[in-house]
Figure 1: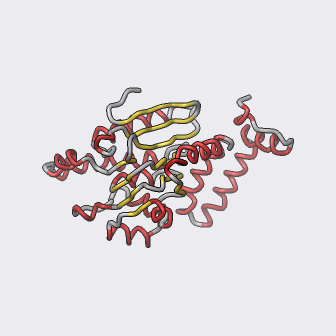
Figure 2: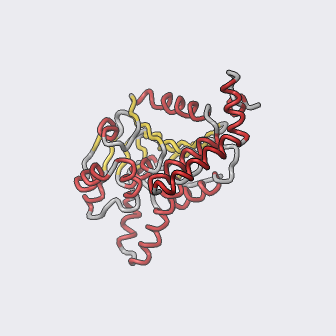
Figure 3: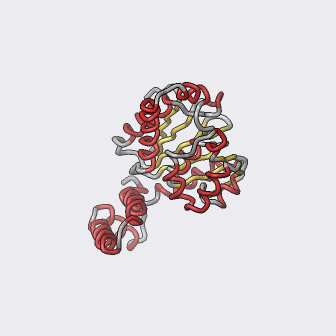
Amino acid sequence: MKFKTIKYIKESRVANIIFNRPEIHNAFNSVVIDEMIQLFDQLEKDTDLRVVVITGAGKSFCAGADLNWMRSVVDQSFEENLIESNRLAELFYKVYSFKLPVIGKVNGAAIGGGTGFIAVCDIAIAAKSAKFSFSEVKIGVVPACIGPYVIKKMGEGKARELFITGERMLAERAFEVGLVNKFVDDAELDASVDELVQTILSSGPEAVSMAKKLVSEVPSMTPEQFKPYTAEMIAKLRISDEGQEGMDAFLNKRKPNWVTGE
């Protein structure tokens, strides 16, 4: 697949997605949004994939919205703005609800909407030098499309504070508020993400997908709903081919076939 604003590199069972506008710190515009949606639609059909990693080319992860794009939307009508905003909202949900684990490899600055791409990742690891900010209020707008995912990840209290202040943060602070799961020395970022990928690849593919679904759906359920839902989920997995293989491998002290490839 050929793209103008992103790169896609598939290595073994891992999809590497790279924001590829380093000259403007990987800021996104309508083309980035459309290409990301197109790519994730294609990845849904790839049955060989196990993990997705999102990062940025150059020194930044994603510096938010492209200034030239922002200049153009100023002159658009409400209806035109709404169409583009809905596309952005669609992209964030598509990444958030993707069937496979999505890892954010935060190699540099993630500002404004750029933090949204971190929030929709299942796990985010940041370089120690990376900078973060929900800077929207500084230009008179709010982190609307990314808001639901940031609030889920950090909680209402921290989101209120950081949405209102637009505070600039380093990776350690981003870890403290729950935006990223881990931060490491810059030189260790590649190895840390690679180690995480290998950990995920050692787990059952179906189980990993169902774990994502469990975490997404159970919090909105009542006890009357989640008790039968979770009981049915584990019962189905136990009798599935993957569940049978995993339990047999464990009991017989061998590696399961999704690790050995047999």
